[in-house]
Length: 192
Image 1: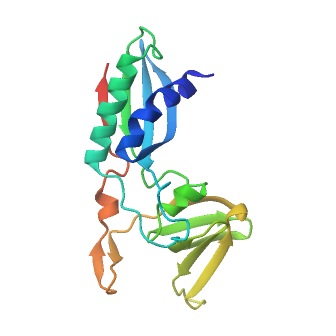
Image 2: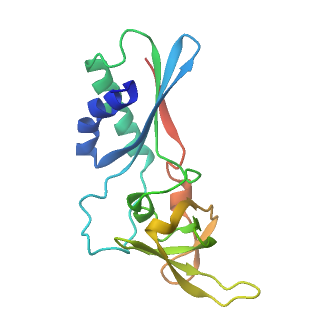
């Protein structure tokens, strides 16, 4: 078992009560220290499987701070990092990170996403993530009418959330995108 896998197994139980899951754990050398990066996101395991279209609240800075404390405490209690010093960085995946899994897409319902798939690429508002397909509302373009496009999850290579400074709210008016100002790629660092 690699050190990253050992870290994941060590800290997962500390994040579960916070309603968070681990997206990724990486370790990289930085001089005499190591940098341990832990990406966390909202746990959607408790969502009703029939609910494929309700928005999932994004992870907040407070969630990241709580996760940082929990991960730090758990690593300090264990010997998984050994005696060598390390820097701990805990953050959310951020909007630039490629999405590949159903859960990653499900957390982004309501957001503007670009999906690269077997037949090309499409950008639209993600409205539904079913067990085996994505549904996007694609806006009208110069030579194409607005449309609903369904893409099989098996055909998806990756997806990326697009930055929106203003996003239509439920009434159709433009509103600031709170998710673009949330934890995004912000994180918390702790030097151990």
